[in-house]
Image (cartoon, rainbow, N blue to C red):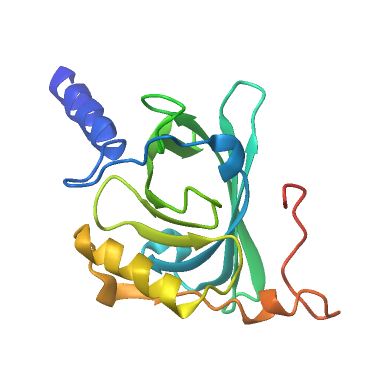
Amino acid sequence: MKKLSILFLLFLLGCAGIPENITPVGNFKIERYLGRWYEIARLDHSFERGLTQVTADYTFRDDGGVSVLNRGFSVELDSWKEAEGKAYFVKGADQGYLKVSFWGPFYGSYIVFELDHENYQYSLVCGPSKSYLWVLARSPIIPERIKSTLLEQAAASGFDINKLIFVDHTESLDSNSAGARIPAADSQQ
């Protein structure tokens, strides 16, 4: 039993680690990072498979952490899927390195390793391994030159950008129409 507990602990510690050759951004200002981010692209994983119009909303928690609300539209189910979580800084509030949990005491890494420091409009985020990558932006569409730069940065960091899934935000762009599906968020900028 003791060996199993140690193995489980090592597994959990590995889930909050940093992939090789990835460095969290420094001079990180969480108050500027809060608000809504649109998922432009991601590497495939089961918990977001088939989702469109994916967004992440970040707000302060009373305990000093960050509340996370991820949502996306499942075309197959014709309904919204949401995941609420909490995140805390791992090393210091000035580093883009947090641990995030969507269930109980289990945490995974949330590492901002590229960021538009001037305007906080674009970021590259990864998880505990290079199997997890998100290209995030403050709007559902980004200029092609910015997208190319972000993809080059991701590739240079060792991510397989050929496996990226680009997220459809067509209905997000039509959010002023009566048929729009994207819900309003209290934490929008």
